[in-house]
Image (cartoon, rainbow, N blue to C red; front, side, top):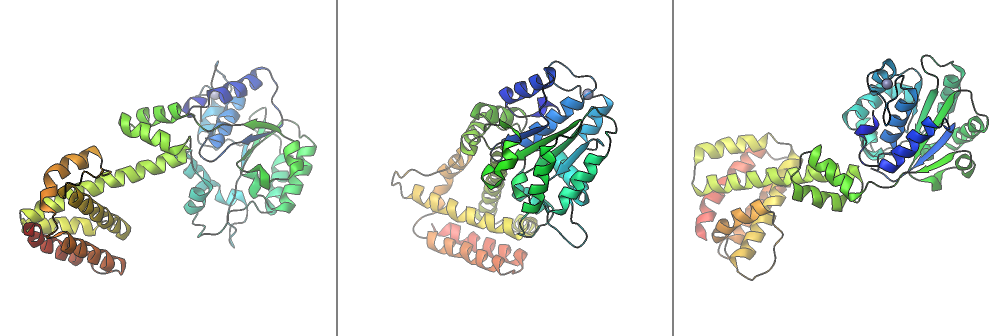
Length: 373
Ligand SMILES: [Zn+2]
């Protein structure tokens, strides 16, 4: 990972680059940040820069032998420690190394919860078990293979078992030749004070609103208004910003489906209604429920519009355009019955009813109800 791929954090990047140029790389550094600030990718970019064979002014070259291996996280002198869930077959981080690399390549900004879901931890707590400290010692006993430095990145050292943490403390107390420890923590309150005092503390701030906004516009290609909204809502946490995009997309999909079902049922286009119910029955049950909940809200909002009370309604611009014309079909004559049909559909979907029949039944009821306005 190059520094160029890191979102924002210009001051931290400069400081890290300077430590390399001044040849003052501390052997144990503690990157402290909150979730979604990118401390882990930053530590990896720093490690790649340290090992790069052709360092550029402000970044690693990205093309030397070392960088190529670093970019796939397969460099033999780069080691990782991170929380895992112990199973009969897997008890140390190296057992999860393939999953770890794949996961990081897909999305370098992630939370502990997302990582644990990825390894199917089933609500178990992720920990760094005491066995891991023996692994660390074993790796430290190797000579470096290809680089000047061996780099050990420990993600979330606060999740370390006490015995392991005490062993790590001993390791940090006696610097190993040409070995750098980068600890990436989110909660130092859970760490041994003695470990903290053995490290050089590097505070990584949350990402600025401007940098989150720029990332959302340029890399994710969101429109400017949505990007700015999400940049404000996510409060400098990229993990949150990415989650919010998914929910925005879900709203858009639900809106398209809502427009479609209303148009098809009003025009009583039976062939297309059939096609529609087949299409929607292929979406997962959670998404079908999400669509029904969304529809109930949209119907309620259109009823409020229909009543002309002047009450402010939270609608996106697409929803507003559509609702201007649509609200005439949702009046006090049919809102209760339509609402009941959607709620009934939700009830049956939740109880694993046949979703195709449920949606077909709902659509056929709508063909009548929409005309009873
Ligand atoms: Zn390089």
